[in-house]
Image (cartoon, rainbow over all chains, first blue to last red):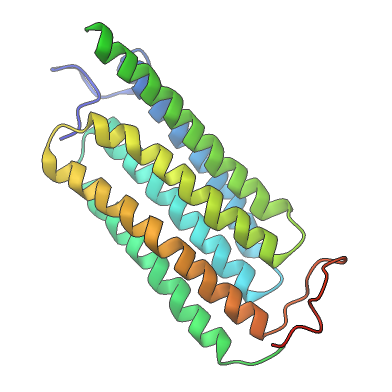
Length: 108
Length: 112
């Protein structure tokens, strides 16, 4: 599918590093995205209100979708894009269901 | 590699790094902002822009049409659904009278 490497090159970190600027930027996206994911999980654990936790989960799912798209570009595996579709849809469904549940609950 | 392809590669790399920095800035905003509403703004705006910035160069560089259309579908769905989810959560939080940061005007006497 998406070809980040030249034809016949083996997929490991050494061949990925010197391939092209986009591939190096894709590796940067994965690393920075994992850092952002860790920060979002920290807010999810800490957040005082349930709404804070849900919106942190939303952010974690967006970051995960971005990491999966970049990973599909880097490794050339198309199955990662299907998982990205599922996480993108599931984030909206979870947020709207929890929002409806919380709106029924009344003032704190 | 022709000149045009090289320009496309370098611009794609710049936009990818910009998108990852936007995602990280959104996460830092979610950690550091004092209030649910400011956190919600940081997440729903900056993270959507970061995701689009990461998806666009990969759409341009994709080889087959089906994978390209998958990424286009993800991007459009997130662009449509992120404000809706943020609005639903904000309305739930407003009805539950979540505390706002000190100095917010007209919050307590707004009709809930």
